[in-house]
Image (tube, rainbow, N blue to C red; front, side, top):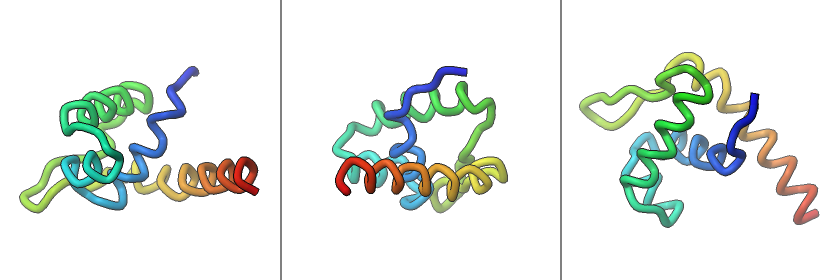
Length: 83
């Protein structure tokens, strides 16, 4: 399976912010651009990943399972590149 590696930091920002708007601001993106990226993530991972609630977005069980793995992978890449 091919995926866009640029979507992984977006996933982590969504996990941490629990808000599409706040994640977009944090990443310097527009809210529609981040929503588009989320749609691509959902297609790639074949899961909703986040569901809207009254207070923002909540991760699905699959998103909760993926989050530490993705965060660790991104940290390792940062260490290797910025070492």
